[in-house]
Image 1 (cartoon, rainbow, N blue to C red):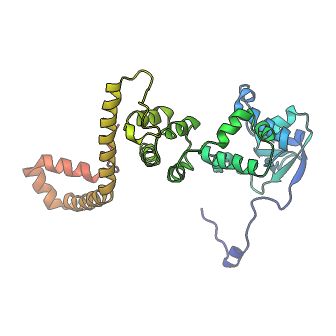
Image 2: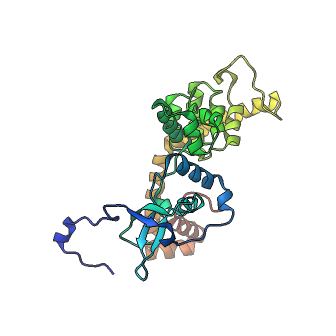
Image 3: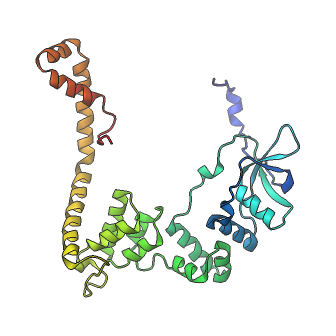
Length: 303
């Protein structure tokens, strides 16, 4: 039931957290979920532990007061608390939530894409932060750090813009780097349209790329397990696919509008008792199809 709120109360902003952080004994913090035995062997846990050891706690855990005891319920930061325990820490600085909603705070966090991570690393290096320190904080070796920092080298700005917030594996950018700028943009659009950012799909796009659109157009393409004839067929098929996608994109809005209007018209038609009775008597198959169209909620085929 909605609660009535006085108009003057709308001027008051209710804070989700207290203004100051609290230093709380770790033993007084009660987790709301258990940490599995395999979690501590995961890369994510090692990365968090490495980051805390190297640069300290960046994001304080979120807690709320337990109304029945003097303890605190841990709403967010289970891995951080576990890492601090393993390091022998007894206290931690926390954010105190004014609400005890048991939703997962991590669902509100946008994870870093490969390009966003690259920009973060490049900015840290530009500020003269030692590469060894950055690598240690991210729990990776310096060689991997340099590879991440150089992720978009050889990738045109337009392709970077298209993929900046997409979760592409690093190897996808290695594939794009083998294409010229125009083809990189086309390949990025194909990845977006298919919502598929896997290395296998990117490699298939490379296989279907004409020789003239490669960075090194004089060196023939060589892909493991594929003959020259198979590569030529893939070029033709991918070209047809790209033309089909472009054609659909050009007319999609207009076609969807036409279908919406037709659906509305048919809904009125079959909703008319006299018309429905006439069709049921003279053209029952039409009436059945019209009703199916009216009940459609998507233009996509059913699974």
